[in-house]
Length: 301
Length: 294
Image 1 (tube, each protein chain N blue to C red):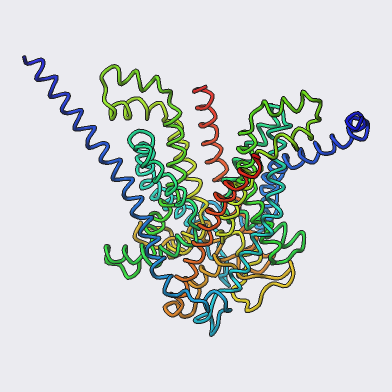
Image 2: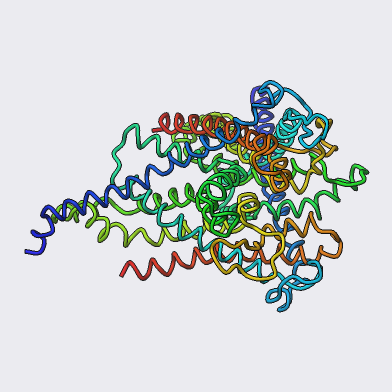
């Protein structure tokens, strides 16, 4: 009898109410993503009452507190972000793909079981700790090797970001190497190729789109990372001249200046405009990776 | 004859290529392991010297060159608690919607795309969003509440993804069994899906919280304080946090050399915190699994 009662009008109402609650939570992801974009845009726009969009995007001079003529050009910082990111990927991509190939093709199950958690542990280290290591360990090492007065350089940032991008590159690359159908491998081995030839000429090409996606995701991570570069690269405002000089990235600039800026000034709005630029950059990098991975998934199915 | 020599030479060459190739892969793995171990050794070794009962239980003293990090430990606990209360139920609910209610279609694809993109939004951008929404618009001020909610949004994509994995691991036959007996969808979820997926959901949630606890950029401008000798008394108070404290001690301090041992100590406590969270998640999963399966 009880079950009959529950299926009455009241039960239906309860059921649809519960579904509505879950549905709203599901929609939250879209709302938050759009909300971030909308609020950043809304807060960034007032900056362009005093600064032209062209100056903002193409000027290399950022001097927002100058008493004579405040300058709001983000090009130097954008160049620093790109430079530090490229440096990081030049290190992290080959190493990461090599580790992924090792895990998927060479390692014995026992070795895998040790290496995989270690890689996960690497991802768990807070970025502020990595930055601290940059100050106390990696930076001084760079200073010693290149005979500099201090090691807080773009190179320092690249090395540390490489470490932070590694877990992403390793896990996505390994997933896509493992997703290569076993028949491909068997066919290659049956034709007389050895394991190395099979890896380089069959598996890696077959998994290439996933490996490239891992590179994109690692790039997104490096572009958006704040604490590590803030602590490790010295934060000089000039246009970056080389890897052995100090550099200030977009993220670091927000972190440095937002604490001191008076609310609702052009400077304040301009910092949110930088945030918007970061959001758009990482959005497209991640979206590209996403499209590549989805395509690969469909192809392998 | 010449053919077979040629063949064996080719064979030798490809064997050599395999040997050097695998050697390169091994070297890559060893260098990653070495770097990680060296990091842990350095922080463990130097941090261990700074850690004492006083360091754990006292407030910072003498311009933060002496004393401990007690307010930062408590502050990190509190802010993570708020993050958990906000993000875990929401993340679970969103995952339940995606896995149990949503039909494959454009909307569902859009939700999933948003989740994956949210996971890639830089943490400092979450910080900016927190400043606009929680600090200014909702008038929570720079407070432990604003910081906790900001971190909650940051962890949301991870919590949803982990919860969905847990739901996916429940076999469809469990669902079909309940529906065949005339259960409604919610009854089915409550009795036949949740009991088996809660361990996995909570594990994922704790792992996400471990990452949130170590974040600095999102809390820098939403509530973390440079120095507070007392604990927050309400949700609207500012707080000290371990990651922010480490940043201050490592870069913003007036006497960097004097503060260095304390910075190492803070770094060690933070790492131990994160590792304990991770271990806790694994143990929790093992225990809950046993409990729920019976």
